[in-house]
Amino acid sequence: MVFEAGRAPLIGVIHLPALPGAPRYAGSMSPILEQCRRDGEVLAGAGFDAVIVENFGDAPFFRGAVPPETVASMAVCCELVRRTSGLALGVNVLRNDGHSALAIAGASGAQFIRVNILVGARVTDQGVIETSAAALLRTRKFLGLEHVRLVADVDVKHSSALGASTIDGEAVEAVERGLADAVVVSGTRTGEEASRDAVLAVRASVRAPVWIGSGVRAETLADWLGVAGGVIVGSDLRANGRAGGPIDRARAEAFVKARKR
Image (tube, rainbow, N blue to C red; front, side, top):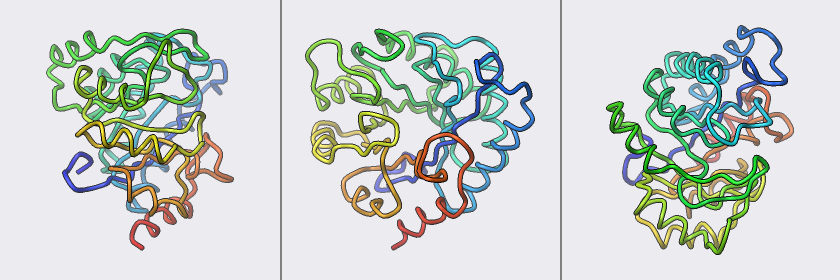
């Protein structure tokens, strides 16, 4: 359903609290799992099409591979969300660990993974991050996970390009050479609205779906659905529109009502 032609999916994000090993981990997985279950059920009950689970609370993030305790914890959380919500599931391992995301997807039954930097190199708060699209796609092949779709950010938030780059040019590289199944356009920071011009430029450059990755609110959803092939909602599902924490049921329902209108 998420990648069905002609359909613009509404995708909610579950921001996991700090997981085992992270600086702010509270010492027990039980409340994390309960929040996962509840958030997934709220999104499903509201009428969302899919959910992305990401380790938002693990900041500061690793530049490369995350440790095994993160992979294990996320796999448990993701499988619980998929099983209890019934929604199509995506996995995003911050900051850019696509290999772990693939492993989690295989273990949890996820339908897609999100990779923040698939092509090129970018300067981030974790340092310079280079891509490993060649290794990532070969790992997917080796694991027999070709059915797991690849969603790639372009001009990803909290980063800047290392060298000359345009967002539409990066999108072309991500789709044609990185083999991305969809691309995501976001604002410059978490919760910031994307540039409409940037979305239109990317959409004109690639044949893959173009999703909005940040800054969408219930009152602006209709406008964005007019230019994008899908919408990812994270911050505005929370109280006061701030990232992190549990999903607010009324806010989730407001998004679906806005889409119906």
